[in-house]
Length: 156
Ligand code: SF4
Image (cartoon, rainbow, N blue to C red; front, side, top):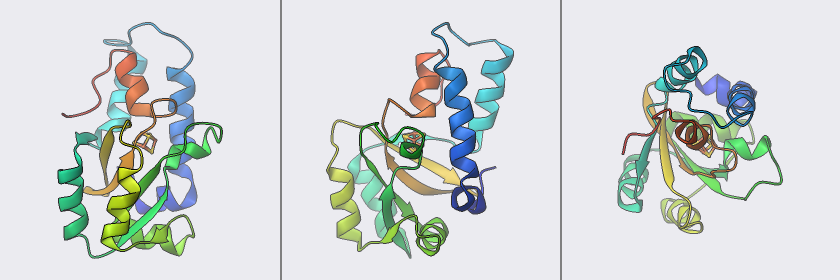
């Protein structure tokens, strides 16, 4: 299971970088392969879901703390398209304390997500709770690359 510490320490980015290197190294379908199974298991605890702005707004409204920061995987490829993520609750507090995200009022968090309408919103569980809302970027997103390689990643 991904932890707050994984996000703060950079382990989550390092793990994503390793997964991306595998996924970007080919085009063949990975369904039924050992590496496909390993990637699917590694992503399972995030339970990534595609959501719309209404669902993201409900999550933001319920959160006790909200922060906005550059999406985690942009660090892997700084030249990739700029999009942001909203962090909620304990993850927001941890990311603010680590200087990796800025506290945000709820309307400002919504405005940050509205900036990139062509990119799908992905919510992910950290420590068993949905605490990350990301305007995903297909260039560096592990989930979208898994789907490209035939591995179902997102609940829709
Ligand atoms: S784009 Fe995908 S891999 Fe990157 S932070 Fe967002 S959800 Fe995670």
